[in-house]
Amino acid sequence: MHSKKLRDFVFRIHRYIGLAVGLIAIAIGLTGSLLVFHDEISDFLLHRQIGTITPGGERLPVEVILNQVKTAYANQPGVTIDRIYMSAKPNAPAIVVPRKQESDLAQLYVNPYTGVVLGNSQEIFSERFFYVVYELHYSLLAGKIGYAIAGIAALLMCILSITGIVLWPSWIKLLNSFKIKLDAHPKRVNFDIHKVAGIVTAIFIALTGFTGFCWNFSDFTKPIIYAVTFTRKPASEPVSVPVPGKTPLQLTDQLKTARATFPNAMLGTIYFPRKPEDALSIRFKLPQDDDENGQSYIYLDQYSGNVLRVDDILEMPLGDRVFNSFEPLHYGTFGGISTRILYVFVGLAPLILFITGFVMWQYRHRTKPHIYTTSNSNLTN
Image: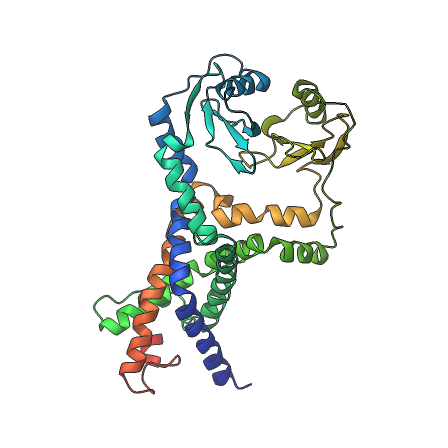
């Protein structure tokens, strides 16, 4: 195919995808900017409402914290504990999530040193606000259908970035290409803003788009990643073997086994079984793990205490390591505070690019077809 025809074809793809996915990309991008510093904002607002937690000696055993919560729900039959989060931060509350039937209840914030329940997520505005932001970012507040639409939009954003890089007109005069001529005609200024904002953020939009697509369609993408990396497909989910007449082991005994497997790790999250055949899942943070919550897991039979599976972050196969790398690439944590600040602006880019791209599209329809084409030398110099 002739290079000009190919370029025109890529340009049409770029234009139509941009117009089609623009509004969804704006919603995903703006909410993404808010989520970059979600933890810091949420912690600040949370402590303003529940007060400051002053570390004092050793934290209470997890069992004691759970008993405090169970006491608070003593008059509500059918309420169980679904999971408990123990933060690596010494001044952070333990978070306990009760569950009734098939639904999570408001999560409780507990002082890990005293066991006092400090509040719940329904009372914390920041938690309600960020819940809506998360749902808008990942599913457009439209449930499973929105989750699929957001995933497809993420893939299209990735394609949009790649086609934008192909179309970028200033590879030869590289230094001049990052200039925005503010004293030029509005059409030129608009084009420059689109061009510069696009090339600066293209790689990062492509990364966030690709990783978002892989997450939203993990049932499809994960097997492909395993195949490409020659990683053996993981075994089916670990299951407990119910013993007639036998109740699950005490958490104290299960934690001894888990801690013996990860002796130098910090306890992160305990996911309690919801069904008799479910395993007890415990998450740990190893010293070498950059993830705040840890990425190492142990699965235990809730009746015998046998270790069913261990997922050690230091010994994970290549396919799992590739999939785990998506999180820092998606949230911009791979380069510390500098890349996180950059990602705030990356989230704003779809809004800027859509507005400037729409203006360019309007100009094309207001003028003669031969003006302001993709090869227009007046715009590329």
